[in-house]
Length: 104
Image 1 (cartoon, rainbow, N blue to C red):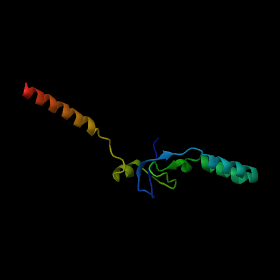
Image 2 (cartoon, rainbow, N blue to C red):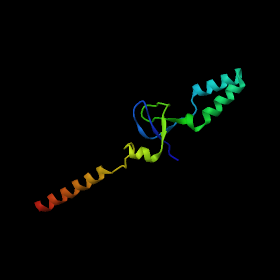
Image 3 (cartoon, rainbow, N blue to C red):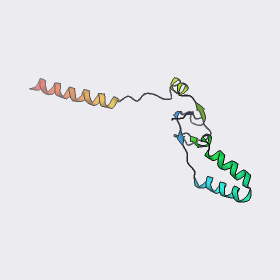
Image 4 (spheres, helix red, strand yellow):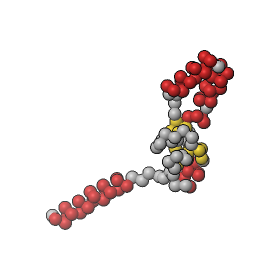
């Protein structure tokens, strides 16, 4: 299931990037578990929640705002990909065929 976000840092609107555990997060969890068991467990639960896993794919900002797909498409952030290059290539090939037939 795709998560749609709006990045307050760069203004990106679209699908979010999902972040996994990194070295810093593991070290913080280990230190909290060794020194303070309850905050360590709370940190691990928070880190595994879906709220902590979303970030902006363009700038990497982690404090993103979740939005619905309808808001994302209405704001113009998500646009249907059109294969313009394929159309241009087809037209170029047709033009070459027409030119060759006229020359013959």
